[in-house]
Length: 154
DNA sequence: GCCAACGTTGGC
DNA sequence: GCCAACGTTGGC
Image (cartoon, rainbow, N blue to C red):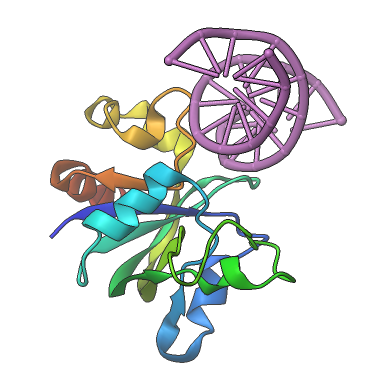
């Protein structure tokens, strides 16, 4: 069992978009970075939990919790020439990109802002807070996970 | 909109 | 395999 953080731009796909899906479940498409792909393909397992993070928006931060309900399978948006995530180099016979399915567990009672996370010394080693960290899929340690959840009701 | 920090591409 | 040029991410 591993914890993760998954970034999404709310103007593209927000936590409320996920909440409106059937069974609050959807596929997580559009990962086009090898490190992030390797995480979801090789390490993410069914039952893992992840923070849903809003990026590139007025208040970046952690907004909810999702559960991995289907392990990695080929990202079909890469095969669709009309799709914005189309990648001609990904072949259905040998897919380059993968996706998982996530289910919304719950929204947090409040969004925990990036700015607030930065204030906590206990969190200074988080991958998210490292300088220049642009990965859209990041591992979170158990200690960090528990610590952040305690901030929710502070 | 700016721009720093990355990642990727492709010529050589 | 190097590395300059280019594209992207994402906070601010």
